[in-house]
Length: 129
Image 1 (cartoon, rainbow, N blue to C red):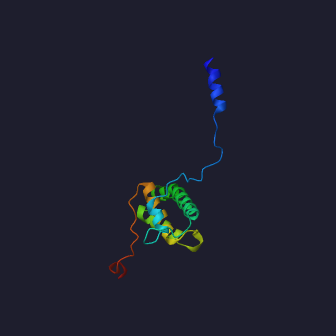
Image 2 (cartoon, helix red, strand yellow):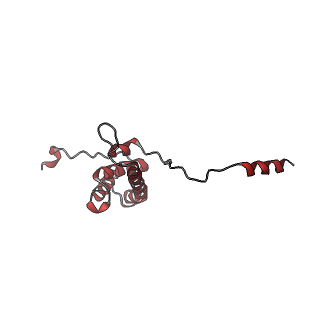
Image 3 (cartoon, rainbow, N blue to C red):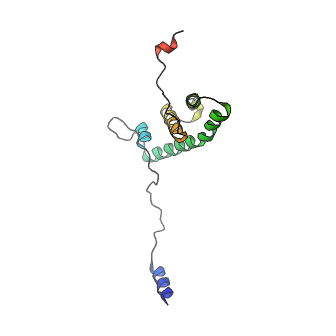
């Protein structure tokens, strides 16, 4: 008869059927820095921040197979692959800002376990013939 008492207890339990507004994914500080000012205050709404993070994280994950293929099958250097991705993401039609593009490519390198790319502009020595 213990099953009867368990069934009775289950009938008495109340469940909260409303969903929590709590966002389940932790946004990394590196991404939050794109949308904070010097005083570490958000410069956009939390909803917009979450939406942009979802887009950028999804894009980085989506690009991993493509970049790995270009590197392994075609033989393009890892850093060249990342810089090509950055160039593509920095076009007006990409739908991401320049800062987001840099974050995406940095995250892409992390997902691929490749060295982080150097985004500093080329030195003047490199520009001279």
